[in-house]
Amino acid sequence: MTLAAFIERSKREKEGWRYTDLEALLASKKTVIPAKAGIPLGSAAENSSARLLFKNGVFQPKLSTFGSVPSCILMGDLASGYSLTLGEKTCLVSQPIELVFETDQESSEEIPLKFSIDIGDNGRLTLLENYRPTPIPVTVDMDVTLRPRAKLVHGKIAAGGPHLALHKVRAQTGCYYSNFSLLRGSAPARHELDVALEGEESQTSLNGIMLLRGHDHADITARVAHKAPRCTSRQNYRSVLDDASRGVFQGKIAVSPGAQKTDSYQLSRALLLSDKAEMDAKPELEIYADDVKCSHGSSIGDLDENAMFYLRSRGLNEKEAQAVLVEGFISEMLDALQPNEWREIFRREIEAWHDL
Amino acid sequence: MLEIHNLHASIAGKEILKGIDLTVPAGQVHAIMGPNGSGKSTLSYVLSGREGYTVTEGSIEWNGEELLGMSPEQRAAAGVFLAMQYPVEIPGVSNMTFLKASLNAVRKARGESELDAMQMLKLLRAKAKAIGLSEDMLKRAVNVGFSGGEKKRNEILQMAVLEPTLCILDETDSGLDIDALKIIADGVNAMRSPKRTMLIITHYQRLLDYIAPDAVHVLAYGKIRKSGGPELAKELEQKGYIEFSGEAA
Ligand SMILES: Nc1ncnc2c1ncn2[C@@H]1O[C@H](COP(=O)(O)OP(=O)(O)OP(=O)(O)O)[C@@H](O)[C@H]1O
Ligand SMILES: [Mg+2]
Image (cartoon, chains in turn yellow, blue):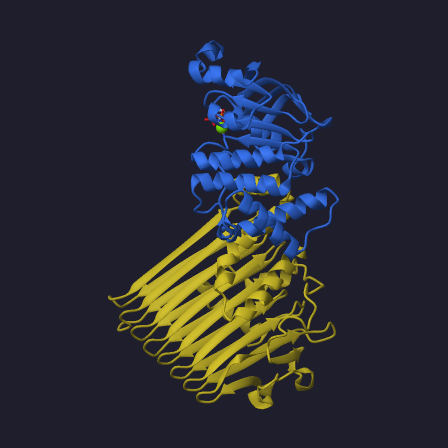
């Protein structure tokens, strides 16, 4: 999907874009894209055995490391889209794949990425998308197919710059799909997940953190469709908003008739560091089955003044005290993050945000 | 030396401190006693720079330096430490992280180098052990789910780690069992030094049996109404604060 197609879509699907006026946001150019990534490239994930590099959206096999992963794992090109296919019972868990996206200044107006991921019966994949900061708009159109009992552990870092992504996931019987995404500043960012649990006993766990300041605007829209019985879904999001930034969380749980014994849960919590920051959280439940367990919650709060004083009376300045409280606010998310080696990667991205 | 002159402070438009005069020489330990609501915690907050209080008159000099106008962290750097009556819970932040961040901040402000991870761990373990807190308590979130007594011990642990020169203890003894009281008193006594000044707010003579004060002051209705030696605490224990109630207006 190109940028124009995204804008077109946002106009057509007004309700789903109520808090994010994409065209106006793209035109405003108010957000400053951090010049430094905060983290020297090449260090982000030494542990990944496969690190596939994309420059301006073009896959660079020669600059990539594959480890024990076959180099034919990724096919296609920028124009026709990339595909990543995992055969039956293929397991790439101990060799996670990291896709790193970099741009240079002279490149085009936009980078339209298309991915199609297909994981065969009983296949296992751990995949991290890592978008380095860039002023060039990046669009991501990703289709994921999980065949019976397939498992995808999916992570994403959008480290800054216009980022528009639609991840569509279709899970067949007994699948597992997890997503952990970090949006760190943006102008604007839309991270959209559309997960359809089409087969029985599938599970999904969608998690994320937004860190925003200045005039950043980030929107996380997560939809889970329970279409078969005995599926489980979890949504857990934390947003930290400073200055005049704005965050949006739209979480939808739709349970089809017949999707009995659905177990579904959603939580969004936001921490506002400034009076001018704004968070819009919209949970949406659409339930057409009667034997289901669905719960949701959302909270928006300020920094705890008592805790701020406590920390400052122990010598931390305002900025340091705030960073400690922000860390505390998101720590339970990081503690639960799998695989373990991602924890350090995400933690460093978060630290870098404090230092920017 | 701590010198408080004619300190007036109000909160939400209500005057709580109505002209406090108090001098505590370096190396001395002074106790402050007084009825509930008389302004003891207010005084401790105003000394440590908490926002929300309006100081309308007076001065607080610490070793010749005016504290009013300094931020809480500047005061911490100048050696001020408040062991709070109600220690704050900070979910998600481990006690270890909190102590490390505090010590490094204070060391930086004093122009000392930061400690590396190993040095820090050794120091924190030793200090926690001395105060009777298990290593497990260092890993838990700051004060979250701590019992009343554990919270108070945690305050003293922070004091022992940060080594401040002006220690203000606001009812650190409340809620402590007899053994804990002794441990805390030992911790405090170990820190007595000619360079360190301590202000101990308490309701009970019992603590002062362990930590012998150089002087005792009665803070009632926003002012120091009476000062004396350790015997004053014993007298108050018997007579209460009736004799000061005439000052209520
Ligand atoms: N935020 C506030 N708004 C209004 N009044 C307040 C506020 N904080 C404190 N006060 C009032 O100030 C007075 C002094 O309170 P303070 O906590 O200093 O008393 P204290 O001497 O420490 O009492 P205690 O022995 O019970 O701890 C009390 O009457 C209290 O209600
Ligand atoms: Mg009090």
